[in-house]
Amino acid sequence: MKVTRKDKAAAERQQAEQTRQRVRVGMIGLAAVVLLIGLASAIFSSVNQQQPVNVIGAAQPEQVANMSAPASAPGATATNEPLAEMGVTPGAAPTPAPQPESPPVPNPAASNGTL
Image: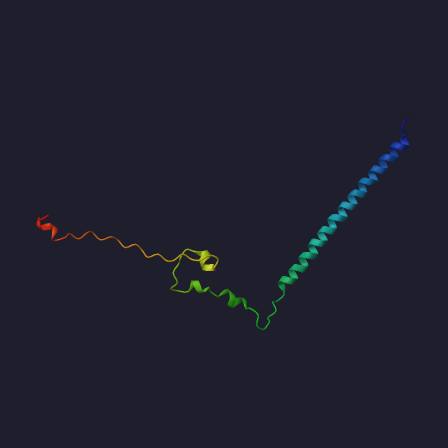
């Protein structure tokens, strides 16, 4: 079976048409993705530009940012136990600081030379 020139030309035209179809589909897909990204960007930028709604009784950001924890009050001692400060684990009992030992006092009765 011999392949004629007409068959070769038809196959080449069909392959070229498939290539053009693939390029068209790819370009349409790319344009759709760019359009969706632009739409999402426009929506999120308009949401960010809106003023926050003030509701009676709602937390006010200026006051919440300036609140301090009770453990950070002046005069509170640092225990280096962050889990105990948060209430996750019980804190260790404070241990008294070790007192330096004083030198032994000589016994005056033992120094008179009697045994």
